[in-house]
Length: 198
Image (cartoon, rainbow, N blue to C red; front, side, top):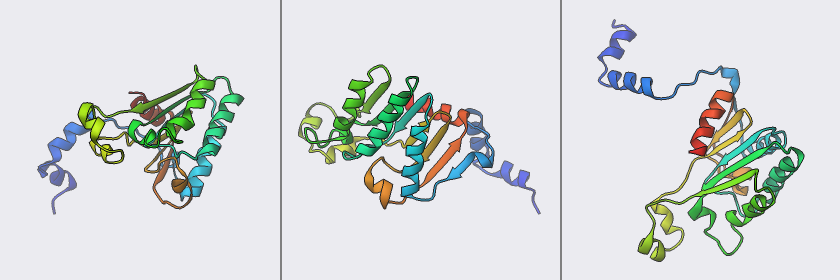
């Protein structure tokens, strides 16, 4: 019977896997540093609780924040008011975040945070370079999102980060099941903060 080592070295992908292993990030953590959040309501409650207790940083990368998520924005505002050392960075997609403008939108919801905490809150909205000029002028909203979106879902608070597929909106907080993995690791959280900030 062939050994596992013989099987791996005989695999046509073995050298590729070895090469990728040398350049791709690898972060070793213990199993007890990973928690699975069970459902949408728990995800929302955990997220708000962690925001309330934030000491240094909050970074949220999401496709969009729902235009009616006043409670989430109030939770962020209260955390900023409670802790003058806290910094908040939010990354959303520009097309999705301004889709409803001039009606209420993600951008309109976030603007007061930037206005009230200009040195402590940063909001960035990614706009695909594939949608410019005539294409942008004539392609209708919603359809224009086919040219590219910012779709990362990272929710980092201090030295913990939730990796998810959930956006920050009511349907994802109530009835739309997704995956929610909480990593309790400064190394992992710092790694994803660098991606968020890139």
